[in-house]
Image (cartoon, rainbow, N blue to C red; front, top):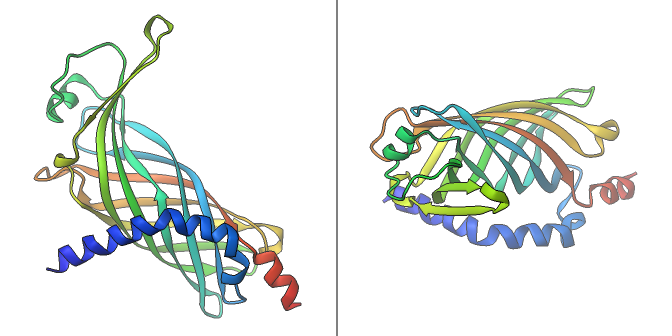
Length: 233
């Protein structure tokens, strides 16, 4: 029962996530306060899945929104939803494709496994007085789609084929995350950072060792925070 409630919760998050990003652009200054920062998080994700012949990282662009909530002194609670978030593996071999039940004819080109998920970081964040920070904690995700993607530009003709294999992947992806970064403009502007995520759950159902990990290079853009600081002076 708890599993289904968790899935329903993530579905509701996913349905409202895109509208929340739009709302953040319109109402960001209303959501920010001296103890709460709200904004957009975007960046590039470099991901891998163990248990395959290929070890080539998949590169994707991520986008979402975040809440950075002051708890006490220099301790903060960081959460949000990565609305556009993917992980997977690039440059799949023929054995990898067979393992993933690819049943189409094999052509020369690039094959990759992609998995789409709503990812929710739940992190403790400590901000130093020099505007650097460190963060760590669990991260949970709801997988809502996955597919093998074939790309080719043979004879200057671009071809893309997607073979959806959602039935092979687990609904839930969960693990631990940690990172560090720096807040610009003397602690009042954008934040740049790096986060590492190590999953503890298998990507593929009934396949032990299919564990994903990722490096996330990110930029946090507070929405309306400058107005709040100015009004508070």
